[in-house]
Structures are given as structure tokens and as C-alpha cells.
Image (tube, rainbow, N blue to C red; front, top):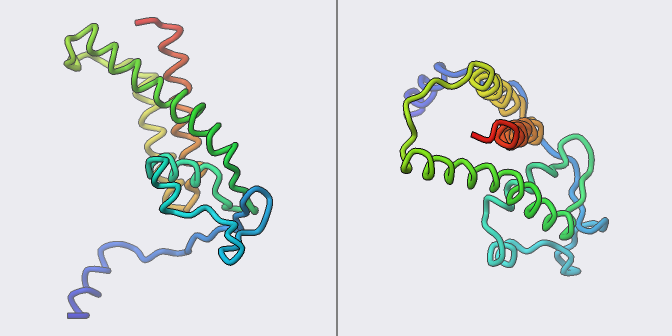
Length: 157
């Protein structure tokens, strides 16, 4: 059995490092479950979608220095970044496709500057994932989201 598993490992290189994080505090205080000073997973999942939580924890991850979880920042991040930037981009894109093309994406050429941005993003985010720089990768994705919203505002397709 082990021979088969180990033989399969030869197809991909083994990791060269393991990512780790610094400390996370809650409202500038050290987490303490015994003092009931923590963000309890069942409670936060009752109020927010897992992807919203993942986004916030990733974008505020303590990758290279300690980081703080703040409910105020969580709400702000959720409303301004996820709903304001990303949600706006998705909503306006879907509405445009519905209004202009009866809900079907047409076979049209994508301008090469846009194609190049997306291809570069794919490579850059892939490298961020390989090097465990998840926060940086997510920041790059949101740079494209903000660019796309600005592009739509300026072009008014």
C-alpha cells in the first residue's frame, strides 16, 4: 500500500516550506476561551456566510506580524469590500448580460489589455498561493475587481 502512495508522490515536488502565522488578537486583547474572550465558530456561522469569514480572516491574516480581529473591521470589510466592490462588480455584470444579451454571454473578442490583466492575475495569484502569501493573492484579486468596476464606470457599455 505505502509503495503505491509513495510512487504517486514522485509526480509532484514535495513542499519546500510550511506557511505559518503570527498571533491573532480579539479587539486588541489576547484570545482566551476560559475567559470567554473569543470568536465562537457556531455563533459567527449563525450570522455570516463561511466565505465572508474566510475572506476577512485571509485579508487580515497575521502572516508576517500579529493581527487583530475587530467586529467593527469585520462589518466594515464585509460591507465595503465584499458587498461594495465585489458584489457591485458581480451584480452589474450579470445585469448587463441580462439586459444586453438576454442572459447569454455572447461570443465576442475580449480586448487584449483586459485579457493580459486576467492572465497576469492568474499567474500572480498562483505564485502567491504557492508561497503561502494568501493575503497578497487576495489583494491582487481585489485590485482587478476595483479596476473592473472603474472600467465599467468609464466605458459605460
